[in-house]
Image 1 (cartoon, rainbow, N blue to C red):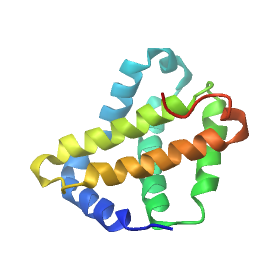
Image 2: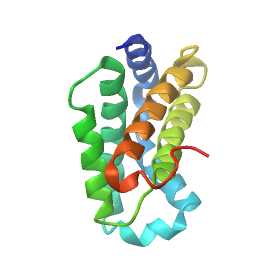
Image 3: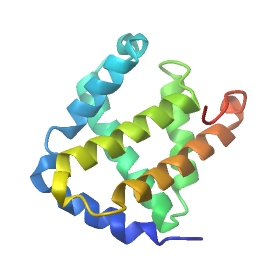
Image 4: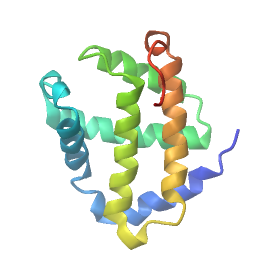
Length: 143
């Protein structure tokens, strides 16, 4: 298991500093703007956006560190979101990419070289795990 991305990812999070404040709201609003058909399914967006952002970052870091619980977290993501709508691996890929892009933009010049690539490798790994869950296998992982 390659855990070489974990230190760089942790350093990149630290580079955000207080620029992390408000990021969850920005991410959620941007995701919903790009996927307006999902807006009605989130009954409490203020709670969802914080949780989605925190759990996404934790899962990406966990995958990079080789944590045993990541597969269970992905299954939990899917089970929870299927209570709302049929989110596809494409939706997860869009969310994860948006997280990476937004962190890099907020950190600006402080964002470490190659950090976006490290985060995206973990995002791709999570999307592959989403696609491997039985109820999502019928949807291609990436176009």
